Every structure is written in structure tokens, then in C-alpha cells.
Length: 348
Picture 1: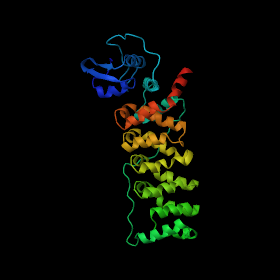
Picture 2: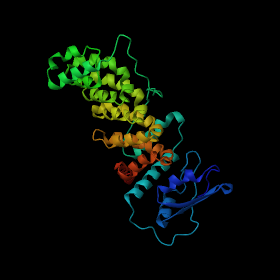
Picture 3: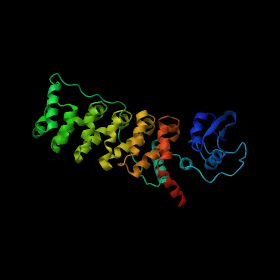
């Protein structure tokens, strides 16, 4: 491989070429701006050369030249795995994007739009005005005049469980002594107006409560039982800035997944993932929660493509991270979105 930057290392090249098959070794000759990539299988080397010849594989470095140190002994077999086909298609997408006029750093949305078009979907450039928080706020402490009384909580819970206190549910909702299980019962049985009043008080603290091992159950129940537009608005508004932090949390990611059944109102989740794909995708819980979201029946094909466009956009960094590889493998193995690419190209 010729015409590569002098600072290129095997670590950078390996994920690019492993998309075509298993790589045995990579040797860099920095003084000659070239590298030797040795594939285990000859047909993988043939396919790699066909796909990346005269293409820009590293943004801003220009097209590369690819040749064989030793000529192939036979033609490439016709059969190849779906994984390899998808890898080749993804490389084609990246090559086409890289060959277009360059955008500024502030125009990454335009680049995603181009990738979306390659995936067979139209997507208008989106200006995300949400400022995502890097710090999770704390829940305010009780004042001196407010104390939790466990006996009172157990008494209320028992009465709600057996139905004797259901007629008094509105009055109980006005009490200060409410634990997470009692809150769940109140949201299950009280009227929509009372739900809204309680939610208005709780909404600013949905995120920090959502990462608490006990509080998260109440928050998830509140989200599940939010039915009016005003209730859903409150939840979306107060959770939106904390989506990245919640997805990176072992408990908080379930709070975000609970928002998926909101229909089109769940789009704030996908905007956050796309805008923070590298940060979330490289996290242990972040990558797995994105994969779970992508597998949800509440997610549309276009939303899957939207996340896929960001994964493709950041594939180099994700592919060298053990957690990010989970998303790359999802794209290569499980998603039918890349089938759209061949369909689009065959009609172009």
C-alpha cells in the first residue's frame, strides 16, 4: 500500500484491512510512505485491492495505491460470506464519502446525510440545540422538617397492595413520606392531573434518581405510565441533556430504553446517540445499550439507519475499541441496512 502518511501505524491500518478478512501481519516502511499487509487468505487480499485502489481510506490523506508484492495464483472465488460482503459495502460507503468535497468540523451532519443517502434513506441535516451535560446532578437532601418514616411507607404500600387504600390514593399522593414502591403505586392508580403535579416536582431529578439502584424503578414506572402529551413533554425535556450519561450507566441505560415506546417522541434518544456516538459507543454499558436499542421493536428502520450512519462515520475509532467493536459487528452481522447499499448502487 503506497502513498500513506508517515505517521501511520499498524494499529490504524489493521481495522481498515481486517474488514476484508483476517490479517496475518502489517509492516510499515515510513521512509517510503508504504506498508505491507499480509492477509491469511489470498482472496481477501484481492478483494481489498479492488475495493480501496485509488480511494482515500484515511480522511484528508488523499488516494492510496495498492499492489501485490506477489501476484495471485488464481481468481477470487465467487462465493463469500455476508460479513465480508457487508464489510466491502461499508468500505465503499466510506470511500465515496471521503472522495466528496470536504466539510468543516461543524458540518459532520452533512456527512451523515450523505451516508444516509448511501443507505437508501433521506435525512435533512439536523441542528441539535441540546447541550449535553458532562456531570450528573445530585438529588437535593431532605430538609430538617422532612424525614422518611419506613413504618409509614410500609403501611401505605401494604394498603395499596391489598386495595384498602386505593380510594385514598389522591390524599396519599400529597404526603411527604413516599418511597419508590409507593410512588409506583400512586402513578398506577391516581388521576392524570395528580400524576402531572407529581411529575412536575420530580422531573428535574429524573436523571439522577434514574441511576440510583432503588430510585430507577420508580422513574421507569413513571415513564411507562406517562400517557398525556404534557407528561411526555416533561420527561423528554428533562432527560434529553443526560441521555449520554444515562446510557453509559449500568442502571441509567434502562431508563432511556423505557422511553422507546413513546413513538416519534423517542427521537431525542437517537439524536443524542448520533451526536455522542464515540463517547457512548466506547463505554462498556454504552455500546451494549445502543445495541439493545437497535434491536428494539419500537425502533424504525430509518432510526436504525441514522445510528448506522454515525457508526460508519466513526468506524475507525470504534473498531479499535473493544466496546466499539460491538457496534461494528452489529453493523456487519445483523443489520439489513447494508442491503440497501447494493440496491441503491445497482440503480444508480
